[in-house]
Length: 272
Image 1 (cartoon, rainbow, N blue to C red):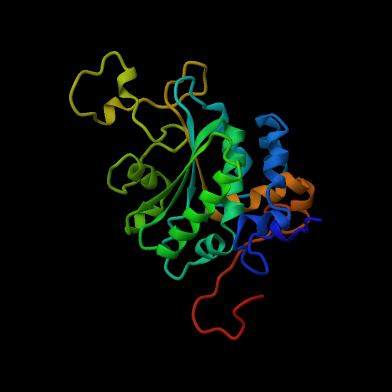
Image 2 (cartoon, helix red, strand yellow):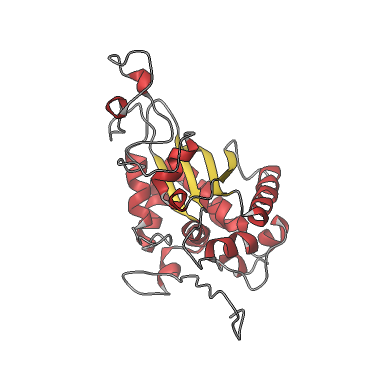
């Protein structure tokens, strides 16, 4: 009988295989999500009150609904997990990916179902060698088990620059450019430039004047992109498996759930 261990963002002991994760209840969130329409999944996230764990604390359900409303009629939305952790002394995302990458991937696949995406990108830094190895192994297991269901999962090894951790700068790297922030938020401009859809754009290199912005209508030709932090995605499976009310049972009314803290350096108690 599956336990609730998989519903912990950081399990008591690392999951070394997908089978271990499933034995602890992993996969139930994805199964539950795929039994209902995307709007129902988004509504559950809204009801849970989950906020982004990357620092800004933006309501996750609101972000997902906005991306869903801005979906393109021409190109697919892309789901991106931001694992480009760069704040000094910050290791919580890497700790999650090393101990429980399956929850992060499961959360991203739930997000893909919710916003109609066929592409998931797990973006981290090239120098996080151990994390990269762990992610690639976990992705291979998930794909082999049939979890991806036709969704392409890519592990991106990005540059060292601090700005790479800012979500729009990360998208610039995905487009093959330097990690410099964009003015347009992800749900207005996705990970490809679709200048060829503008009749008045001639040949030659594109400029800021050529950028086509995503719009919330049926004729939208620009795909938005959903970018969420590692810890945010890791919380999603438990919400879909156990329900929004269970998630709200912890934390505060304004910020439900739990938060992962890491304390680097020589400490008396390494785990809690």
